[in-house]
Image (cartoon, rainbow, N blue to C red):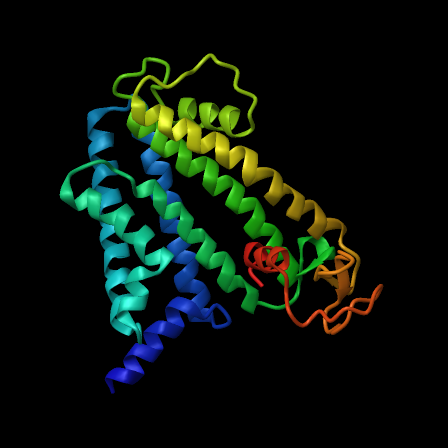
Length: 273
């Protein structure tokens, strides 16, 4: 009986091929969006009674996520492995500080959309005006959202660290402006970090902007212009990149493609394959 209940809950949380799964994950995505909007709104000057209502609403949302987390932990076959998983850590880091009365880092919940995008691969059919199939559309959305999530999270972190002492960082929009200018290495210089923590975050943002954003944008462009019917499986000998999905040997030099290279492994991870 208990096993059947756990199976039902797991399917509702992790199977978007069913109406219940789509409803549950759609509700999760909506609550993450609402929580993020509340965090942004609270960085502006708003009436105290509205701020109080928003705090209560955000608390209710975080309670819902706490219950969901407990359900996931209860349903997990390997509970220790679940505790060590990325999404489990994100949930705990985003939820616990609110209940402990310390910094509000609920904006980290935006990273949970990556889980939902991963689950969307189970939905078949053409999307994005028919130019890409369902699987490629999810990969495209995942790459775009990864860029957005990185900027959003860094903006929240720099805001939390700098806004109490930095007169140029008063709102979330100020922090996002600084994050985008920093991560794209434009660096206008009109906003600069003051604290040691802010400077450390700036270093991390620059590294991310230099290392990850061009890589992700490159993957995005390649997905849009990739030869139909072919996938990226680089040959370890001649570096030919595109081959048929079921190809076992390089179409140029005949080298076996059965053992993926490090580059192809990383590419597979980024595209969710």
